Image 1 (cartoon, rainbow, N blue to C red):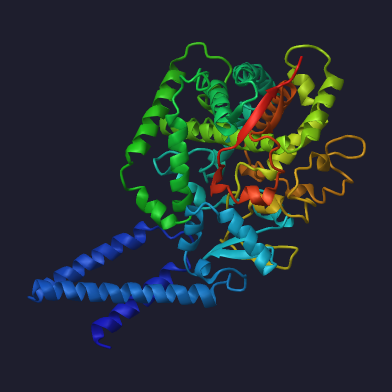
Image 2 (tube, rainbow, N blue to C red):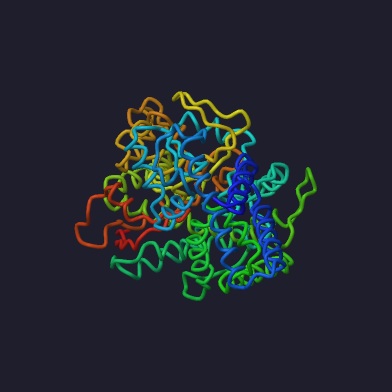
Length: 547
């Protein structure tokens, strides 16, 4: 081995020794010196009066040696010297984040994690060079309780600049923003919203009556309903997507971005590179559309009570105020959780109800016992329907909007689990909602749609003493801790109102006569896990009920 090659190998070893122990090493601090070193080396070779072909060959061979040595060192370190080496999992996952990114590209990450936990018979599996998937309810509070550090994945949601509540990692600012969001979801505020939710549901009900029980694309109909609702409640904007006058580009752009973000989110170094690149046409279009929503909302002189009323004001404790770019980012987050999350969970819950006419009948019986009037049942009545709440909770358990969860960084000193496993500090960990909430250890007969698991013998919906409910801690459809979904109260209220409204008005059946029995495992095989859940077309019939 000649001297230049030896020097190159030594340089690669030195760089790896410096870089590898540092968590979240900035990509810029690696790439810029690498490029500068190549420029200096190029100048040195030219100064030696070498021909251009000789300079090129020397540059290529030196870079190849450096990169190959770096790659081999990284592979050896990750396989044999990493503190995560004792955890089972695919070897390719241990070597590179591209394994996880490919699972995300294929839309099957959460299903793969579930299969791996089963294959290795372990609550902790390795899914990346510095990533673990954990399927244990005891780990939830230890990893997601307190001021935990959000993982690197969610940084993909601020590639265009600014931050939203789902991407922010600064605890002080996050606490301030959380208070601002929280003011929009108090019980008083949610009560103001419910009448407007019912108004939008009126349009859907009328349309379904016109369909006279013919099969409809349930997901598309509920997506339009959810979009109209959130545009109204968040921005005081009449979107009219249900009437065919709204702009579906918002939904199409979000769906496209989620598929991109789901891959790039697993490659933090690639994320950092994308921050220096110009936005593509879709990115610029969404920014322009967001600016339109924001400018229209800020121009309103006397808006109705809405969520953005509180985001446009500053935090009363810290005086933090959001920048225009931050507000644009909140629009993205609002539309994602307000449209996609509600519509996919509700669509699949209705499909599950189509397989359980007895559950529909019990919902109607509970409503009839509490409300004997005509017209739309009051929100306060719906709020106290225990079985309806059980139906919604079971729907959220089986069909969480977020399949894979969001990652956290293990705190300083690491975390010891009751399983005997120790999670080293600075490890990125995932607790998948789908994996955890479909585990028979916590929810016996987890693959079955059983709202009764949430009812106790006294008819309350806490599930205490119910053999179908072993550990409530495993129910985390809204996440857990400081970064849990702030709109939980509104989401639950909206889901309950819509379930009651549709079941009262219609018999919900499968699109084909007779339909097929519901099976979660078969259903889940059709899901696309692109951070949120993408579902295939579901045809249902909403048959108007007499009277």
